[in-house]
Image (cartoon, rainbow, N blue to C red; front, side):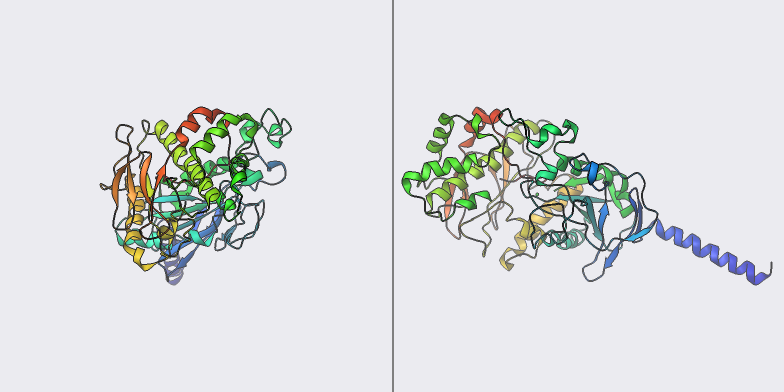
Length: 446
């Protein structure tokens, strides 16, 4: 072998060693249990991302309505991960950001530019809301650029993962009730019910096994997510309003036949017509709408969160917030509505007057993702004290988790009270009720 050939081999070997070294640190090609994928760098916003990563086999054919099945034979071909995967079947919407298909079990990963496998960043795993009926990880409103940029700015960089899961009938078949023995769920094995929740668990298991390849820390994966509008402007006559209110409640139940008339009479008395003390996005002057909003807020959010905390607080650290900021420009008839804070978190911040408050809110999330604690300003929720953090521009303070809580609504200076009456209702009839649920995040809100 001549000296030049030997030199060429040595140089080639050095290049291969350097390439191997690079692949173990900073690279956009990742090798996962579901295959190999090439991501993309978005230099303009300082992030790198991988879109449409499959975390389970497509739930098609014999796997339809079944628990998700792990991918055991990954493709050996390097695939581009620069397009979102399909959204799961649901009503079409311009906000989905992707095509709809049953082949939809995909997730997306973002990280700050320059992240290496040695960095072991904590990650926020985002499951969209939508009452288990709709939603998609490709929804452009869930672009995490602002969150990641803020995490870098304050010196606590994080990763962000958004996950698809099956919704509506494909993910949550109606449960079997005694009056309807022919429901589809009666033909599905118990271990396959609530497939949408099983999808979420499968994604978390996949991330535990693979997040390190993106530079994440598998020990630091943190989960993050209005029907009463149907009553607005119906102009229901006063004599028919109670019946319409009861119908609204029944329509949200899978089996309302188990609820007695005396229970509905109690609800009518607890949520009377034209009662200005009802809490929520009130008082609009539309009595039926205000009653529906009050019941829905208490029943679906406030009482559900309180029941969860009553059980979970002794078992693990919990942090609760009560978001009270009416964002200028939002619909006044909705007031401070469920999910309105997400615009401050993901951006773009809808009004510049909210910029500092939006940063403060985002910092709480970033602190929690890094440290499992949002910071000293936010006390842990304990049953002995029941402290909740009020989130309002220029008035972030600790308040008691009590029935009467001042709430800003409907614009500057408009104040009402949220009076939670549904604790008694839940205690009396929870065992009989089954209603469409909604999802939340690691730091539940009212």
